Image 1 (cartoon, rainbow, N blue to C red):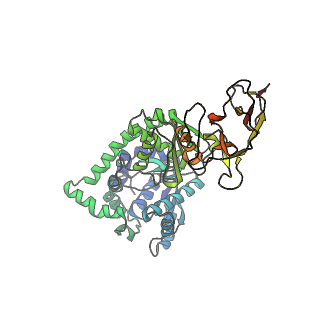
Image 2: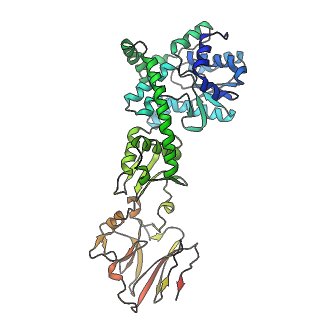
Image 3: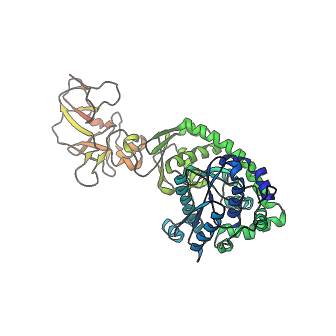
Length: 479
């Protein structure tokens, strides 16, 4: 390819940021064998010395059509003539789609990018793919059809991170180059292009947009695809500015403990909706590592949950993500909730069957006729004083509909309602321990004794009930 080749000149004019991002790097080029990826690899070999590139190709067989497994060999023969090594991979995309209930397109993209990520890590490389201006226009239309906001309308970014692999840089040098320019380059330079029949299958939404929607728009305006790509580029500047504000808000509002992100909803709620969406997207990415399956409707549901002053409601989102609004914090996590980080009081184990016991490290004790005054230092034992009794004391969970009379209140109240009022999440309420005397509530541990058990006189016989963590030093003063 001569230096005067139109595609090479267009690339240097329109992709300065992308070329800067790969300068001096090991570059893994996604090579499907189609016109776009073949032209991209060819152009990069021409620029190899100028940009100080170490090139490697990656070909992935999705297993969607017969004979596709033979293409890696043909591509390897060609890349060897360029002095470029090729790594090939494959997956049963139909099986992935069935098991994960994804579309074939989503399953193929996920499997391909996972392969690119693994290969790039082994080479310490950035990944370069050949999405062109027409692909960008199609992406914008598909995103808008799904109801996307500015993020979707901004389309694909020229330099970003690989989906599901935040440690890998992804570069798209051809985003401002039309498909017709790429095909012309392949013809001029007699490049070995493989035709993929699935690109013409109407089973895929992108192909339907390419076949019907874009041509219809071009009847209205011949530059429709180009203009859509330009609009996406313009919106990307706004998107990046909002992303920076969202990142600043995330830094101010987020507390991260192990596998949970806590967000201050009072601060979050003061931001404009667009900034809230970006802050929540960062929180989800921190927890899940990626945003696959997360749509705008899910983020709006998180905003609604954050604004739910009542709290206590748990939201279930894709990829096992869960969210909870409790008091002035919105919590997001995947998998088991680290209870002691969120609820530092003792909880019950074995409450649904067998003898109830406190969570590991907690013990309860009864000291009749003695007084216990805790210091105000953190981490001291929970304690209450109640009227002296010789009734048997036992630990259990509150029964469905069970009531008690919280200290200082004139009327009885359901235990579940009391805990809800104090923003204890529903999935923990059944595990808050209840200490009973003759099977009647005496102390909702960590919260309130029953008013009927309060002391009326200083000289009245009493019992000191305590709940301590065994690993802590008991610095309670006994007199």
